[in-house]
Length: 108
Image (tube, rainbow, N blue to C red):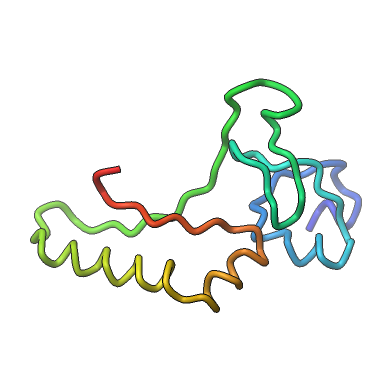
């Protein structure tokens, strides 16, 4: 990473990607770019210290081609939500990296 080698003075990276570096005290995080502070690493959100309404969040999505049957889509969503929300071990592992799991549906 260019930051560790001193090639750059500051970097913007996903919290999950730099969490090992934070835990080893190899880098110091200043803030998170999402709308909410990170309780896992006790970091403020940029919007708390500067421009209000600032939110740069990283999203991962499960997508399928249009025309998929509603029943199949519901089965896929139910399986993904169960895996992300019901597994305490998975949730704890995600929280350790600063990730926040949110169960949402295509409607919201």
